[in-house]
Each structure stands twice: as C-alpha cells, then as structure tokens.
Length: 167
Image 1 (cartoon, rainbow, N blue to C red):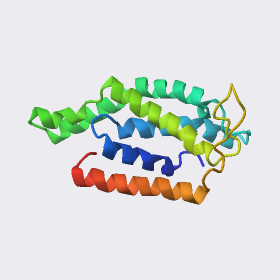
Image 2: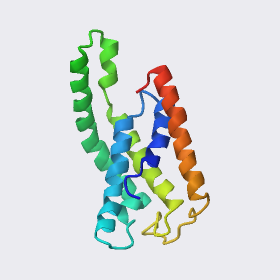
Image 3: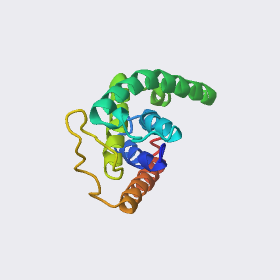
C-alpha cells in the first residue's frame, strides 16, 4: 500500500537515537516521495507498481532530491513555528536548524530503508536493478511480523522522544 505509515516507525526510533543529527520530517517526506511512484502506477493499474524509485539506485537519486527540496521546505516550516513560539534563548532557537548533512542523512535513510522494507514484502520489487532482477530479501520475515516490528519501533521511539523532548 503506498504511503504506508508503518515506514515511519523506524524513523521515529532513529530520531530518538539521533535527535540532532536526524530530521524526522525529511525522513517522512522521503518516504512519501518514494511511494508516489507506486501510487501513480496503482492508480493507472500499470504493473509492476514498484519501479525505479524502489531500487537502491533510484532511492539514492530520490534521497538527493528530497534533501535538496526538503531542507529549505522544513527549515522554513520550523522557523515559522519558532516565530510563533517567540523563543528568547539561542539554545531554544537552535532546534529549528536542519544542517545539510542532517538533511542528506535523513533523506537517504528514508529512501534506502523504504526500498529495504518494501523488498521484504512485495514480489514485484527489484531492489538491485539495473544490475540484478533478484530480490533475495523477499519473505525473509512475514508481513505481519514486519508491520509489528515497524509499529513497535515507532512506539518505543515515540515514548523516548516524548519523554526526552526530542521532537
């Protein structure tokens, strides 16, 4: 299913582990942009639905695009919310900064993990194309177990982020 929220769970866990080095908003943006491809092909009833963006090569390209477009977009959104909060201290304002390395890391983790997760469950995935049509990861874990794992990562990461105020 395109735009599945299960993909967001690992991102929340990564945000809990790397609060200032990882942008959850850019990660989620990269997840959604990646799935625009499969969403389009599903709407067109054009199979296979997982194509170039769902390869590691395509994910690297999409990740670069998401870093370049997502950083200014989410930087602006964070600055607007910061202004609304009228933060006085410099250390309180710093959370609204997304560095280029953070944007690139977050976008690439978003797109590459998307390909990995989809490779575990979708039979039309060819993650190593154009070099190979094989998908050695297919069914290494059951779909319910994968969904449960992603959900658990999101819950644990969310609890940590809320407890330590890392969002």
